[in-house]
Length: 107
Length: 117
Image (cartoon, rainbow over all chains, first blue to last red; front, side):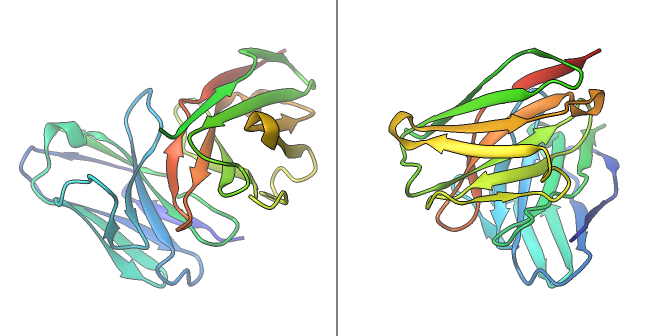
């Protein structure tokens, strides 16, 4: 079964910084990756799909990239409201495996 | 508008069966797939399985022997049943709609289930 590994597990960033988080698939998933943001007590919200496409209404400071096994979510000029957990997910094919998540904290 | 709402018990006894209903509105179960995802307290998301728009199902192999997903299209409901519950099945259980583009675009608010001994 495919394994999605996210790194780092957590990071502490200042408002206005640029942050990059990673997602590595254990096998080639082409561009079949989505990224979600989840805040405490809320459901996950779709940010990026097919590795690099921003979902409706997602601010353009969120950028996804990558192909094959290595993927990146970048947030330019982090805002206070970006403090959350971020999850990658293999999409399009089963199993629809999630990564373990990256916690983004603001200093 | 598109909505999904999970309903189920707060507490289930050890070794018993969990039953959760996902009631959807704003779309048809014969057009869209619906997935189940769970999240133990303080932990990440785990995909459990799916109900396909054509009526078929798909399961995470980690649950296959004790998980069953079904639906009632006339009531716009998808059902999750999982037996032989253990304490590590304590989690918030979400249903989510899979868009036509294979994305999980709408999620329910989730239902928190505690397995108690």
